[in-house]
Structures are given as C-alpha cells and as structure tokens.
Image 1 (cartoon, helix red, strand yellow):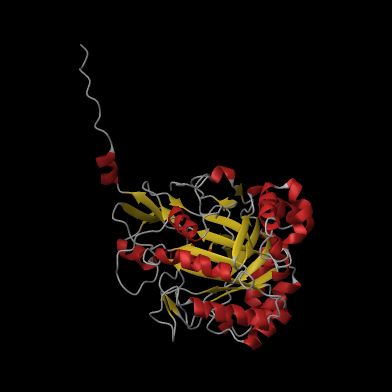
Image 2 (image 1 turned 90 degrees about the vertical axis):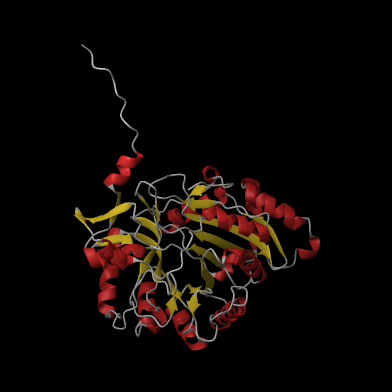
Length: 424
C-alpha cells in the first residue's frame, strides 16, 4: 500500500514479535449475543470452553510467548460463566487482563467484580454495522451517546481505575464519520484512553487466484466458507490507512503518528498506526514523537521484562509532571511550549489518549497475503501462536490458505518471448 502523506521511516517500528509481544489474544468462548458485519468468528452456541482448558492454554503460552497483557475476547467474553475467575487467574500470573466486549452485558456490578479481580481495561466495540437492540439504524455520531454512557459507567463503577477504550470497524460508508468520532474522543479524553479504527476487509474469493492448503487445491466453494460475515452481498471497497489519516486530520490538523507495525511482506507498509496525543477536552496540546514511544517500550521491557500494553487511567493524566523530561524529547518540548503559552490552563488536568488505526489482512496483486508482522492479536492454539483473524482456516483445513495466481493469468501477463533469427 502507498503511505500517502505518511512517513513511516520517521516512526518508531514497535518492537513486538511472535515470541515477545505487548499482548496475546485469548478466546474462552466463541458464543456471542450480537451480530456484527465483518466478524471473522462463527457464533457457536456451545462455544464456552472449560475453564481448566483455557488455563491450560495459558500455561502453555508462557513457554512460547512473553506478554504484558491478555486480551480476553470471543465471542462475547462477558457471557462466559467463569469470566471473573479467569480475570483473577490472568492477574495472578502477572499479566494485565483486558476484556474485548460489545458492551451489551456491561453493568456496574460486573465492572466492580472484574475490577476487584484485577481487570486493567475494557475495549468496547461499538459501530453502526452491528445489529444492536435499541440502536439499529443509528449513525456513528448518534452512537456516541451510547459510547458516552458506557464510558461513564466504566469510570464510576471502576472508580477510575479501569481503562476504557472503544473500537469501531470502518467501512467505506462510515469513513466520513471519523472526524466526528475523533472530536468525540477528544471531548471525553478524561474518560476514554484509546480510540481504535479497524478497517473492514471482506475475505471473498478472487477469480484471479487459485486457493491451496498444504499443496491441495481448494474448490472455490470451500474457500468461500471463510468469507467474513455480512448480511448482504454488497460490493465493499477496502479502506486503507491513508484514507483514515486524512479524515482524522480534518478534526485534528496537528495529528501526527509516532509508531507503527509493518506487514510481513513489506517493511515500510503500515498495518498498525499509533498516535499518542495530549490535551484537554477543549484543546489538543501536542502529539508524542517516536522517541517518546521508544523510551516507553524499552524502559518497560527493561523494568518488567515485557513490552508495554495498556496503562491504568491514573498514568494517562497530569502529564505536567513529565516537564523534567522535556529537555530530552522533542515531542514533550512541543507539548510543554503549547501548555506554558496558556497560563489559565496550568491548573487543569492534562490527559493523554491513544488513537490507533488497524489495517487487517490484504491480498496483494501477486497473491501474497500481507499480514501484521508482530501482531499483538495473535493467539495460542494447539501448540501454535497464530493470527486470531485466521483461526478458522486452521480449524477447517488444518493450515493457512495460500492464494496463487492462476496459470492462465500469469501467461496473459507475461511478455511475449523475443524471436531471434536462426543462425546458419
């Protein structure tokens, strides 16, 4: 993909890798209570795993992958009957438990119980392509009322100790809503620590390719089984990272990323793009730079042995206390220049907030599959650490599907051989 007006060579390439990563994905259940366009996981009514099996996987995980946090997902993890016990176990092993939820089961009691068990944060997925009771047909901007209600509930029931993040899958028809979501996140910077834009992909059979697994050619109907869930056959056009960046800058012209993950096919391609901004509800005062992100990751690894995942809300406010570090970092100097220029705001709390853009798998023109290199959303499954978005391939076929350009397509694309006169 082209980077457009992005400059990945100036960003910090996050040091995460297969064996040593900030986060690992965990699915104690594949049962869900909500339908979402684009979901890569089949809803299994009998998808709850025995707690001892989940713990067994975590025990094996320790042997092959370091992680700071464990993202507990699904399915819908809040309908998993042992969720509080699981969070308690994850905490006891020194990991940070994070729950990825659609938010329908959130209530003050479960937030309190999970907080006591050691939960570090919720990431709540809310977008207009979900079939959410009471909110069907609402726009992304209208859904901000729901997001605000959830954020306030997490803050109050979690007593300000539980991080709150929001995911939204971005489709071509909702790309226009990114400026409103970016502004909303700023207005709630005291309650919302992270905003994530996930770019929609439709895993659809491409007639240019043959599909193979372990040397066996698949029938197109077999490959079609892995198509991501959609409730109609509309032709979706992919959204790419530069599209989203352009829309973010409509709301926040000073937006500047600082770190990224590349694809496994191109070291300069952007698959995860991370920006860390600092400010108040009324004004963004600056964005942290690549050296600041590098310092945080390296220092955390030196101190705790893992790369940094989520942080508690208390660490995301009162950034004025970083003033002594300003002489050593350009991003902090720019932030403090803007802060000092407004004496009326010196007594107000200043918060930090992460904006993350994720571009899921892409199939390149030559059939190569561009995956996130060093993906934090990898999971342990039957002795392997693999991309969670491609688990269905392993379950159905025993290996990953490979896309290969059809022979006739290669022949059509190949230049005609040059004819030479026969020498006598």
